[in-house]
Length: 104
Image (cartoon, rainbow, N blue to C red):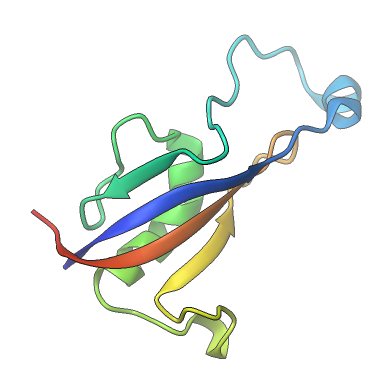
């Protein structure tokens, strides 16, 4: 099993949707573009958003176990995936990359 690097590539915020549909939230998303996390195999990295983890974890697990070439050649690097969290108000896009480093 390998470690997987997770890089925050883009964050977005849709104030119009927030104003129209979301109940007030005291604390939402802390992700910042350029932030890098390392998943030790399938384990959620410390400080990584739990909700985002639910979205990316199946791909992290697959990459950590050697899966590649998702959806028949979707990514230029077959050992990677670009996945966004499921927050429709503040979506975050993550680049997931399998590393050659063994998980602990």
